[in-house]
Image 1 (cartoon, rainbow, N blue to C red):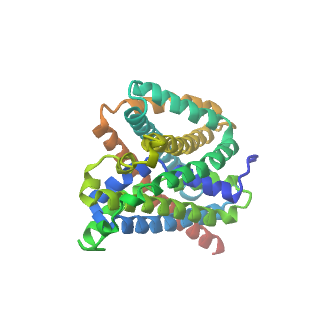
Image 2: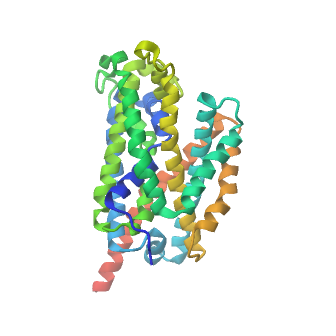
Image 3: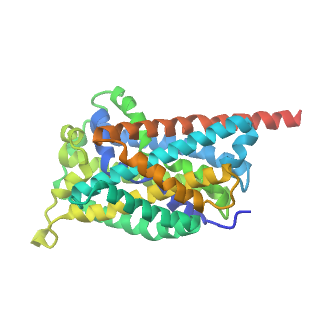
Length: 362
């Protein structure tokens, strides 16, 4: 019996926290290198595709009240295949957490703690994540409710200071290079929305599960508009050529801000303080879902012991890549696995559900 209960707004914030993270810093470069000035269109299309995918997930959750994919996947596709699917999700979550932790640690070391070993930063982030995960989904929800609106407000406040340096002519002409670059950028752009799949695991905690789709669509919509704002500002300040060459365009445009009176000398430090909560909450959500999967597959009532046992695994994944190029490869592999699971598994389960329902009627 599930004791923890989440409200509809809490689910929205949880999903927003899971999606928004590293993408704030890297998305303008990754999508800009492929779609150029039409990057914002690619983000809208990827956001729409994410909305379709999450609607299918919400539909599945409503068909099995009080149950997550951990319970209904074996019922629909059999115990063996269901276990394979859950193991794939577990591997995906662990690799995603590991790569996000490593990227977050690398960025933090580069811009804030240049003398601190990256391993120490990784341990610090995992400690915060584990502390929240051990206290359950309600504690995570309350933390996100407090930190996410504050971080989002500060981020938008900092971004407004870049407007004086923008040239909106740099995002024109629309579709000037045709539609092919736009299509080529969609897989990369879709990866930036990964995180909404946590609905498959947290929908059973909802007080009103029927509102899951509405909550998920609002979370994706908010994420989409935030990504569009960040990307448009990056291109409008730097230009499409420079955006494709800079590793972290968002930080670059913020570093160029000059505050009148020199009241604050480095807004990029404030940006880092805003961004770290975004990355930590992403880590927390995936860490929690991984712990939930393994605990329930092992028949445990609590996920706390599993959350602790997963720390060395995630730490190993985070420290194994030797440089930023290897981290990027690992991140792409994790994103590809996640996108494959999201694209195939929910549709497969819906088809099996419809087929079983039809057989029952006959």
